Image (cartoon, rainbow, N blue to C red):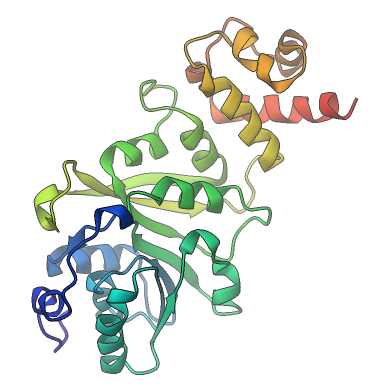
Amino acid sequence: MKDALPPLREIVAAHGLAAKKNLGQNFLFDLNLTARIARAAGPLAEATIVEIGPGPGGLTRALLAEGAEHVIAIERDARCLAALAEIGAHYPGRLEVIEGDALQTDLAALVGHRRPARICANLPYNIATALLTGWLETKHWPPVFDRFVLMFQKEVAQRIVATPRERADYGRLAVLANWRCTTRILFDVPAAAFTPPPKVTSAVVELVPRATPLPCDAGLLAAVTQAAFGQRRKMLRQSLKGLGIDPLVLLTRAGIEPTKRAEEIDVAGFVALANTLAPMRRT
């Protein structure tokens, strides 16, 4: 679905919006792709969508054109605000632009009581993993968002959806993501679709929060996975020494063989380790 706004390339040129590498910017001009990403976040009618790093507003326009009731766009680059304001004028009352750093922003507070709410974004590559990890480690679960539709570098996307079967990609991020969400890669986005083109293919990932993930303290799970995958080539009886407890006791109580390595342990196994660690930390 197209709007009557000028082509995005013309808007970028008019406002002098050369992409900045230090902000992780790569602008997506292909209207078919932005529309496809927006539809992946649907149904959009009556939905509030939070978008991180809209830049000149390619995906923002697609979300609004596809029927999003309200879009909250968080943009750190002040150069882009004028272009986003033009979009807001075209869709009065439906676009809210906030200048700020998404890493320091309480997204749930911005959404308030609006439901349904979800996050859809072509995330800046330099903060994408940090953003996702922060959302996954939040204290309150399930979150206010019913879905995350996010673009990453493909290698990061593969790490998000990996299982122990994909040992090269499986790590801490996969455990955190699949503990609290169901995950899948929706489709790839070629480098040529961006300006400037990155050196890698990108991919759009869908994460759907689990209403009742396996009971576990997020902080302890983060600590266990950090220790285990921080020395992933070592057996767990060695890599878990960084937790400050006897790893053999921990592993025995959790029912996990001490000679296993981190990439061989599934999400349930790491949850068992975190839950076993809890009383050991209190003694």
